Amino acid sequence: MLRKENKVIEDVSAKFKIAGNVQRERRVWVTIDKDNLVALCSFLKGLGFEHLSAISVTDWPQEGTFELTYHLWSYSEKILLTVKTKLDRANPCVDSVISVWRENAQIHERELHELFGVKFEGNGDLTPLFLEGWDGPPPFRKDFNWREYARQQHYDKSNERERAYYD
Amino acid sequence: MVEQATKMKRLINAIWIFNWFNSCGFTELVPVVGSRWDMERFGMVITGTPRHADVLFIAGYQTLKSIRRAQVIYEQMPDPKAVIAMGACTMSGGMYWDSYNTVKRLEDYIPVTIYIPGCPPRPEAVFEACMKIFHHVGAVPPHGKKFAKAHSG
Image (cartoon, rainbow over all chains, first blue to last red; front, side, top):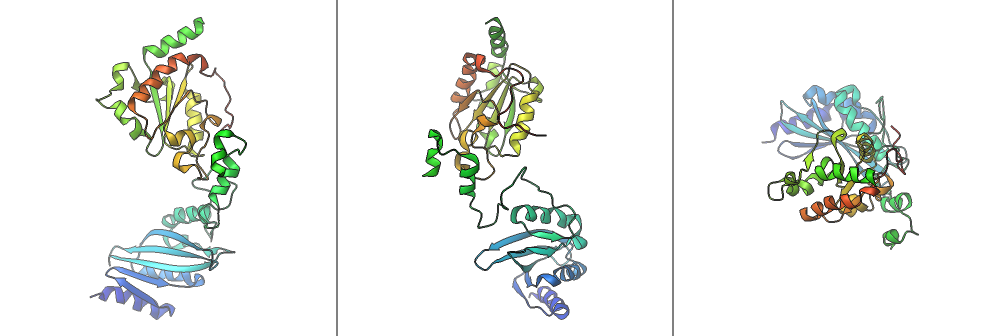
């Protein structure tokens, strides 16, 4: 049981001196600091994790960090591997994994740059994906008060029909 | 008045519709299209291009991005033309009233002829609105009407 899952963690910890844990069958988590992220990703792709399923950002305003989560899938081992790393929220900068997964990574990084303002160094096209003419803060950050933003941008308090939106 | 009568006649013969539906929009019109209420018995046809359409149906919440495409579609429609906005989200943002990127006042962006409230509106309300277009046809904006908030591309 869990032989191939433990093998992945052994391989990773032998090279990067980091711990990982097996969540359950076919689910593995690994945490790494952001400076070694690209090296780890490159190593994992060599192990067979060819598909970058998704990248996501979790915002932790109290901690002052963004947590990046990379979901990798191996077609040969049938393992979903989760790589986690933390960034400084005040200066969210991380090396792009475009050198590892190419276009597969490009669109995910572009989206996260738009929605959280995370800067992916090495990604050449971080132009907005969904929003047009947006001048507010990155909208998915937890400290973005979208209700107050909508009131200021879209409503008129002196308008009888819209006064209820300010109550 | 002669001009208005001509407009009315053209609309009364058959309302050709172009749909601009976001999110759940089309499911609101589906009963009208289907066999139970069957809008085609009134000559209402959904066209494949805005250049053939008399009426633009808008439903579902409109985003700041999609409304610009709706404006382009509206401009492509030949005169006389009317816009019918269906449903709560289209009118006021609905449950997305406090979202940062939905349209709250549709009339700022596109000249709306008639709003149909409801979530979704009853098919009878849709037919009633279509009948009322004929009474309001004089209110259909003339050619070249500028949008209050224009698209830039």
